[in-house]
Amino acid sequence: MLRIHGIARSRAFRCIWAAEEAGLAYEVVPIGFGPELKAAIAAVNPNGKIPALQDGALTLFESLAINLHIAGKAGAPLMPKGDDASRVLQWTLWAATEAEPAHQQWAYNTYVLPPEKRDPAQAKAGAEALAPRLAVLEAHLAKGGPFLLGRDFTIADLNLAAVLYGSWLNGMDYAGFPRTKAWLDACFGRPAALVARKQREG
Ligand SMILES: N[C@@H](CCC(=O)N[C@@H](CS)C(=O)NCC(=O)O)C(=O)O
Image (cartoon, rainbow, N blue to C red; front, side, top):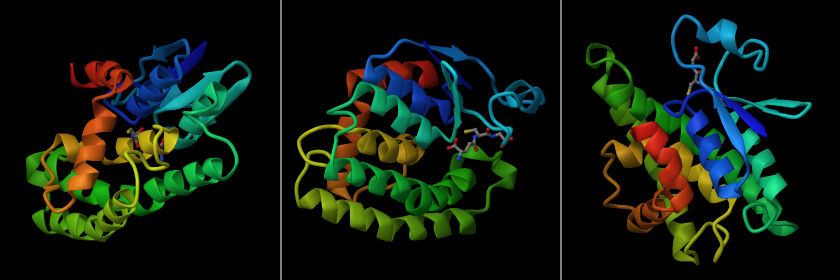
């Protein structure tokens, strides 16, 4: 039984979605935001952040690494083999290092922070930093699809879509990136995504 520490209204959402896609049994250990977070998560994540995963003797932090582990347990097509496994790593690292920082800059200054703490200039800078990355994604999807590695949905799709989830849900303008928008719609419309989204969005 996987134990996912966190709540769906955090990056634990990604791991819940991954467990659903993998068809693995899991339980959510509900550690939410607030003063109790650091003490409650300390035993399983030295960073003091959610999520963390326990799978038997294994304890993991970093949401996208947790998802690679979950997908690895499920095997193909969620975690393919050979060169496609390397492509999964490529897109997952790209999600974390290229997409997420710009996305978070936009998100924090658009809907995450309380209104009085949002800086429109920072939101604009985040959107401008994300745009060339989305252009890379758009060009990639134009070469094939419907998913990042072709015909099958993999954990690469889940990890990148999950990083972009907040912008998809909260009104970022994807008009210039129609293939990306269609791909995000397809990812978030999957039955496993709908189960995870219900936990997050209510
Ligand atoms: N890179 C980490 C980021 C984890 C993270 O920042 N989690 C947030 C919730 S989504 C958190 O715990 N924030 C509380 C804090 O930083 O005190 C991951 O992907 O797991």
